[in-house]
Image (tube, rainbow, N blue to C red; front, side):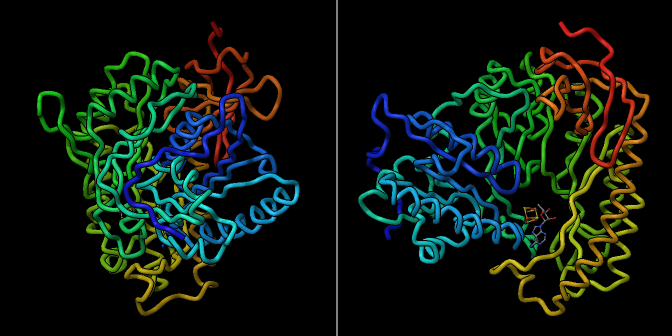
Length: 464
Ligand code: 5AD
Ligand code: SF4
């Protein structure tokens, strides 16, 4: 097994002209992983690979993994069992298969994955995925390779320019890593310190995506509102400044950003929710827990009152803005009364949507060794109660949309023939019967029905 630092060689395994090698990429976890998988796929396509959705056909299998909660890691190892079997079957048929593990499990587990699963050829952390084609080539002669260093080179510059036909909506990473060190979270360890991409590089990528057909762009960062950069004149640019610059790209009709930390919601960003029509009226703002004692133990750097005051400031600027959030139940030492405070926060804020999780201890994080780890049954019971409340809240928010007319950006085919699925400004999925030519267009839709997770409606303008 070898570890990788700087790379000096090019891939030796790139397919010859005319030879068609297939790559199967499976993505776990967050939107940033979706973005990373897109960029890895583009790098591999440049090397002559073609994507397949059939694992058994793949010459190269890439798992882009998530380490945020235990279940995500378990899924990776169970998938690896199946991939190992496929690799052996293919071997018997005389076909080689390269297996690469990317993402945050790769970063956190490193050589341990390669030790546990002999079928793995390459382990590549999120900061090194631009090296993937070279690592694959090297693994042919050097055996298992682990590349998990935090490199100084800029992976975004090293990657090939965006080269695939973009879909209607796209992610664009503008910031990576986190310096907040919430005590439950692996991100500061797997993604490293906070880093903002250069403004010019982001604008360049956004223009290319827009020229390729992207109409809606979601700016990504683990702590996206901590983004800061400088423009071409050397002036400081905040996330609000970046969004203003992106809004000048004519083809881009909708902008969103995620995930924000309450401590970094600056006034200029809040104000933009009233002044910039391209900035969509939704905001993902995790609060994690409703009790101040738990928030302090989580090292969240805000109290429940701080969060509520922030929500008030945001709603004062734009009362129609829909809030979504992340919540953890069963943090070490959480009492029933402290859990009740979380439920109370949900009732007070009235979120349009929320992600809720049972606390899961992650090795190496401070909370993993705290006293008062709760039994699984207690966490499960609290999660069920919380999710029942959240379902009521999201159902109410969605029901309030019935009868309204929303501009909907149609993105993909629905389950039934003749049906398409689009996005409302509030990020709800909207189902409507409409001509397939509506894909990529924003059309007015009168909402006729609502469920906890989606809306249905009738298009009320001709498709051109
Ligand atoms: N256990 C449970 N949930 C977690 N999250 C992050 N780390 C953990 C953990 N150890 C949740 C947080 C975060 C979201 C992306 O995942 O709510 O905002
Ligand atoms: Fe993790 Fe978010 Fe806290 Fe950063 S702010 S440590 S990414 S939960």
